[in-house]
Length: 167
Image (tube, rainbow, N blue to C red; front, side, top):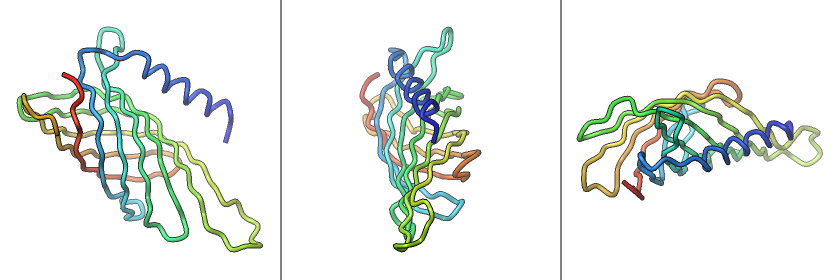
């Protein structure tokens, strides 16, 4: 894994966090889902916050997934995305966008076998989702679809609940 790429990744993340927008909701949530690449169950969490991209407001999303049930392998993913509200109504918000994925895998290999025990992959996310909303709802269920292109390629469906922090 290139140190310069990792440094650039965390600098981009810091830049997203440093430009919060007051016009978008801030929320944190937990989710569970299924990655259809290997039919693997995942658990995770994510945060969404408003960011200002000039004349257009967007949603920054930082999240993680873990895959605890894969035999002899532990897989975790970190996702950093920029999302845009595509349609907002009184009952739901539909959003879409994309970003980066970093997948870290650790393999249980027998002693004496000369292979690498870890692997890091990078990919591009395409994300779409819906958050059910309401004027007085503090807890908001959501469903999200995620297609990763590149390392760790896979199609995933997540469902969970956001805790609305502001707005």
